[in-house]
Length: 110
Image (cartoon, rainbow, N blue to C red):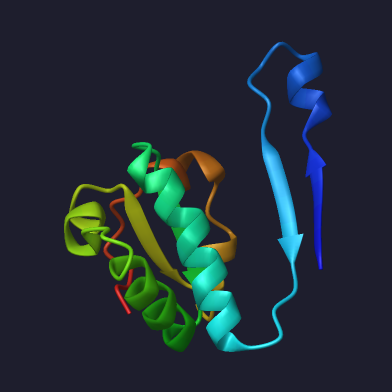
């Protein structure tokens, strides 16, 4: 099931339009495949990506992402791919400005 809601308030304010989507996954494998596909498109278009997930889910997503010809080590090193731990409380309290280009030592690669 997939639902999306465009950010009309940003468009009304003359800013770029963003797209948000919600998806429910029946299995971890479907989560890994779908998220990796979405992120691979953005990274290939030279956009940044943030994965906020539990360690097992981060590993699965990154494994699938690397299987799509994405150089995950380079993307992480360059700051294009950020891997954050969903189980760490501080992750959720970071301001979005910081998440756009984060070089925090608390980032975890998996």
